[in-house]
Image (cartoon, one colour):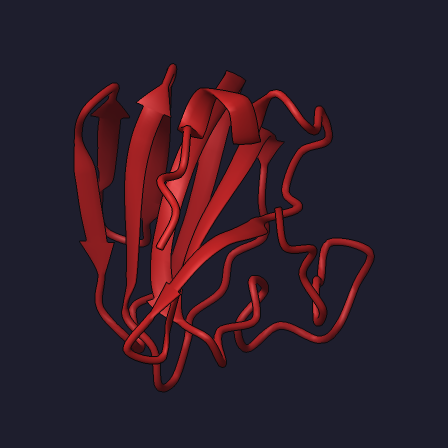
Length: 120
């Protein structure tokens, strides 16, 4: 058992859309990531995702609405729901999701797809 300092973990990288694993529990990964710009529209057939804002803010776009998230707020995106994170400025987040989750979901593999994640 070791405590995790989020500020420290987030200081170890500067790239965007490349989650890192900082913990694991009950088949779930706890990930940190930095976002900036627009991601791809996608959904996950079998996984729910929790997005928690550590620093900054971003918009989660859905086909029928947008949800703005600020520091200290989180959103759970249910499996099967198409979504797209958009961060006009850099934002730092925590993700809680099953270990099997691929960041681009149902989309064909691209330069944004991360099959193997670094552990910090």
